[in-house]
Image 1 (tube, helix red, strand yellow):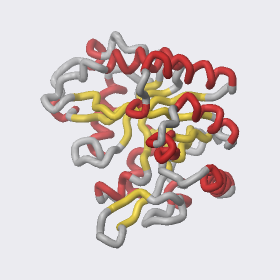
Image 2: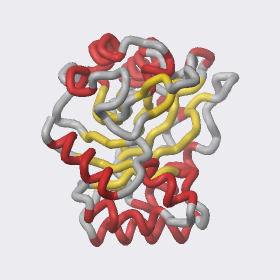
Image 3: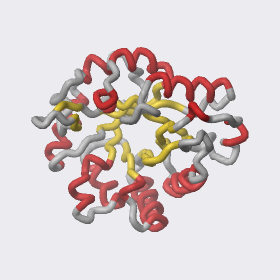
Length: 247
């Protein structure tokens, strides 16, 4: 199976000045097939995008791009920055670009016309269930994906984010059953309530309220998987990769 490491894993290092270009070699050495870079972690955009692409190409690695923005604005209009985000992705030679759906419930336009300037034949557009009541429900994901398919936009897919279901309160297994047919990418992380009663993401797939092994049985097997949760060091990352491979 294809395993991607999301750079949220290295949050502590990024906060201390490590850039994502430097993380490409590190992800390769840890044994992953690719890296999912986060837009909010870039500082010198053009330089870092190009250098990330060069590093990944040298290592024969997949690059996915996580963009913390919505496709549909609060009034239902299309986010005018989408083309910019895709252009950034093209500079890196990415495989997938990931957004949150946003307010598709208020959208009144034509998807084919509104997406015609996006390179959907080159880059897979994905949406994920986020931690909001707007985009983090099975109904919101289904409505957008079904509308996209009716419009012939079959390259738009879905990222099943395991840990986020704990934040929105939906049953992760029922969500997997409902959304499996749209899923082409899986973000693995676990969640639990801390001592103050706040929901948090843990640093270990086996620690939390979600049984990831059981839940993934309801999801496709021949898709990309990503580990997406902060870990203290590379030794911990290696242990989590082994845990994933031994499931």
